[in-house]
Amino acid sequence: MTLRFCLQYMKKKVGRPPKSRRKQPFEVQGKNGAKLTKHGVIIHCKHCKAPHHNSGGCRLKKDGISSEDAKRMVAESQQAQLANQRIDEPLNAISQVLDKLFTFTLFC
Image 1 (tube, rainbow, N blue to C red):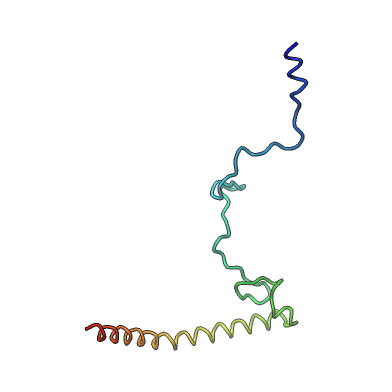
Image 2: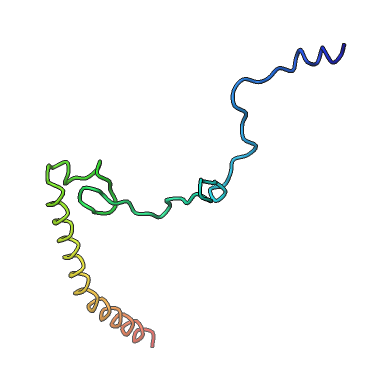
């Protein structure tokens, strides 16, 4: 009689049961082993191949510039930035040396 009484109040819960605990990111398993995160990955636009945005946020695409022209423009701007860095590197090295000499002479 007590068993029947207990079974009346113990009914199966509706829905999927919860997990026992939330797994850490390194514990998540995919089909082929542990699933890797995209933390630290820089996204690139498919339209112009520039970093830090996708094609949905591409200003060149919104302005109506074709993909080939956009890629060419981005490549030219990156080459110009590299050329400017090459010019600035010796100047930065010289200025650092001068700063060290100046601070050394002040403290002596």
